[in-house]
Image 1 (cartoon, rainbow, N blue to C red):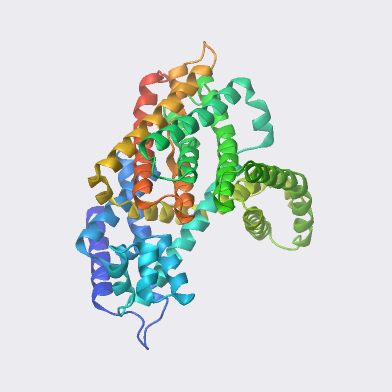
Image 2 (image 1 turned 135 degrees about the vertical axis):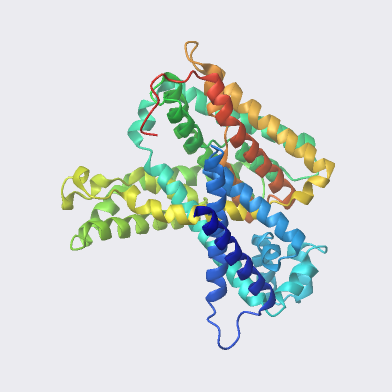
Amino acid sequence: MHRYLFVVLILFFGAAELVWATHPFGGTHDDPIAPVILGVTGILFFAVLGRFGARKLRQPAVLGELVMGLILGNVGYVLGLELIQVLREGQAIFEMVGLGLAGQPHDQAADMALGPLTGPNVLEILEGPGGVAMLQVAQTVDVFSRYGVIFLLFLVGLGTSMGELRSVGAESLRVAVVGVLLPFVLGFSAARLLMPELSLNVDLFVAATLGATSIGISARVLSDLGQSQSREARVILGAAVIDDVLGLIMLAIVAGIVVSGGVELTNVLKTIVLAGLFLMFALLLGPYFLDYAIRLVRQLDIVEAKMFISFLFVMVLAWMANLVGLATIVGAFAAGVILHDGYFRHWGDYREHRFSIRDLIAPLETILVPIFFVLMGIQVKLEAFLDWHVVTMAAGLLVAAVAGKLACGFVARKKTNRLAVGIGMMPRGEVGLVFASIGKSLGVINDELFSAVVLMVIVTTLVTPPLLKLSLPRDLKPNTTA
């Protein structure tokens, strides 16, 4: 039965794609939202297929979604599917539209934003009968994916408390600091050596991306092995929590340097001060804002209050972070660290509430985050690897990424399984993709470099589970709560 349903769904979306290719959406009798519904739902459908395949192969869901996007983007490009050709250009499409609205002739705007090889082809598609609808789909998918990233980092922060940050100990702190700084140094050196033609800003952004760690992947493997309470697990997870904070601060500094236009001591100090002030004021004033806002909505149901306050708080902090020149995800992460169910004491003991904040926000993340990962996969241009220079660049970044994280495990104590700690810190997963996407949206990372970074993310994410299983003994009593 499941096989028949699968075939029916494939035929349905295949027919929908055929309709898209042959019918110019946007006629006088058509609902203008129809192509958006079809496009977004189609991407989500392929995300579900990718997640299903990953689970069958016992791989992280993020990997399945990313690989599915990669297949969809490159096969669709070869088959000449116009929507895919638009989606794989990402932020450059909106830059082209912006230049056109600013008065640039369309052909010049396309060349400036997309280049002389890609620009004319994409311009011809957008000036065709379905061009407006494709722009609508591209804009909607882009917005949804950005919301997904915000909710993703909010949930990461929600699983982090200031108490945890204070209690993880010196060992985790050492691992985290080395696990951020060493990959940064190695990544910067590799970028300088292999890509001397690129600017210093590019090298800094690539280096910051290599410093990221995905806590979710290692946590799941440790849980599957029944090692969640082992010393190595506590060190890895504690270090990964600190790693998130340090990585976001590093991203804020690098992004601030890029936006300000150069590496100058005053710009670096300004960004560090702004990041510090933002986090300090968010942590100090955030609780007062929450108490006041929650008092205003005391007449609402607890579910309504938690949903409204959580959404309002994360969006306000994300906007404020952007206002001071930081990435929106810094604000989203800070919102997650500050907010917890204990603030909603007007409705009784939070431990007796039917739904937690995580329970209510997780469905939004479940829908929106896969769209982000599939979109990132679509924008990976495999034809870039036909250039030997790009292959060399990807290999260099991969070596720096692996070596930097493996080495950080050796600053743990002797009685700790240092190799397991280093391997546990290795996957970049969703965090690395978020960093790379921000670099691409800022125009720092080009298509070739973005493809190389995504390859690094895929490989480090793919090899971590089997290597971690080999480095740790399986518990005789498997963790049944995983």
